Image 1 (spheres, helix red, strand yellow):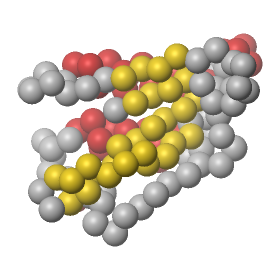
Image 2 (tube, rainbow, N blue to C red):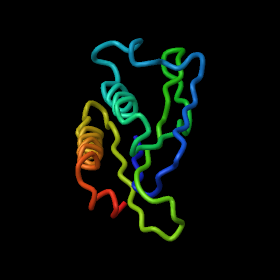
Image 3 (tube, helix red, strand yellow):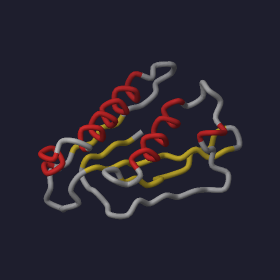
Image 4 (cartoon, helix red, strand yellow):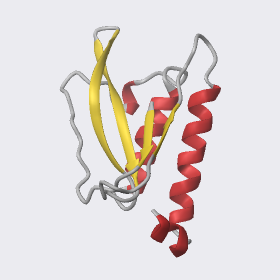
Amino acid sequence: MLVGIKERRTEVRSTHHPHQIMPHQLSSNLLLELQQIETIIEHDNGRHLSYEVLSQIPFNDQLLPLYGLSLGSSAVDAPCITFVGGIHGLERIGTQVVLTFLETLINRLQWDQVFEDML
């Protein structure tokens, strides 16, 4: 999972492949982080977050999306930071920390105008 706080696109882009697993098709224990990413995207509805599907990952005769998420300025000279969280074996803490932080940022943007101006 990649999260980049660099740019805000005015258009939310989505790529849907006919064989892509959607959240309702996943078992309750399979890829909880993917479900969480898609829920974050859905709830934000393009207000602060932009995303694109960077690639499709084959998994059990399905294709899972690899999302790139962005917040903030689209200016070329704006500073940026990237947060990457991965699952290593059974260890999921990296993705959970990054997703929780992303949710915190999006929630803060709903009420903190100074924070929004900084992005």
